Length: 304
Length: 305
Image (tube, each protein chain N blue to C red):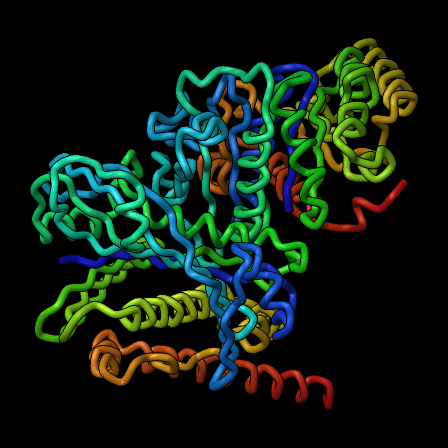
């Protein structure tokens, strides 16, 4: 299955959340890979703590492959090449976890031609042979990479494809997430251009809320009553806004709580980070685990 | 002088075995000619030979700049309606002149690459079998891979293979000499084979390499399925469910040496002694069957209370 991670704005935690979903899916025993399609800023290597690709690779990555300079993009086995000991300790029964990094100094493309599209289609088809889950991290905003992904999936109707739109729980982000899907030059608009049926494509899009504050949780015990009621009021407004914008509960796949570890250092959260050093929250891991299951659970993707 | 080739092997991307009549369409994509088929002891189809012209650097263990010009031969095969292989090889010979000749010269020698300048066979073989980083040198594997991609793109295939699997890469070199064979299993998907045989090179050598690649892939795929099943770690129904694709898809495909020319049969026998492919396969198959039997019995006991 192909999963595309996209967001309208930067700083939504798109890359770190999708990386953690991939990590959880591998721990659940599936073969997974992660493609860095954020050509302008290929930094996913840093999240997986692969120092040879922390700012993209120099050995031939996604950018050079799509341009036809190399016949196969380089692959990094995260279980063996990560610098973090806890990641390198691959548990029994875990699946493959492979990173296909971007190129150092790659840069965004301004457009793409038929040849580049063909290479992209071929790459997706080939990865589908090997991996249960292919996570494609697209850059923020309306990018060329998103166009390429829409054009390629239109040519691969037999490979299941799903889209995750990441947004924070704020007024601006809710409106922007809706615009990214339904607005002018949004996913549905562009998808139609490349031959997608807008109805079918809509069914393949779900939203993921990130850095969410849970009002019921103990974190708010210290708040003054005035602050608490103000937050409750805002939250109610946001929920209404989200529903009006088609970003409400029915189209939401999951949410990730605010976690200091993710705010200060984008990284994979291992079970050791929760149970051992206790730097991360159990709820965060639970949210990633849940998302990793829901991504492939058809009941979460039934037509609305 | 030296023959080198690379075979890539993978699972055909279809939920079921493809029907006999569909082989022509699936493999016929590659050229207008007919696909050759044999039905015993296992359904096997092979595409017509395809030529690819090259003018590029050849691999070299000493990093020498060796230029070769000529054509390489490729073909795609499907075994048991399930396993797809892309295979390419070249015969590397010393050119009579040190400059490039008109293409008609090379086209008259299909599958031959002529070296412009000096070359040593061990240096060439060493460089080729080293699996160096892909660069601007002769890359037989990516040609083989490319033909596999074309087959997998066939509209007849539903892209719902019963399990995920990686393509394996077998690089081989063959020379004339006292018969011998040396197989090395690399760390990830790479394998190498050095082979010496009596007499002149014949395509039977390529058949042998493809047959070896096929059985190595089967073994690799079955090993992966058994490892992932987490026997003893996961619940019995889960283990059975994870082993099922092996029974449905793989177990009946094991037929080492089925299409090998009798003159090369002793080389297969060598490989059966070390590393002992069939021995390992047999023990894995028994393990799978025993697990399924034990799990079924346990399930029956539970339902009968």
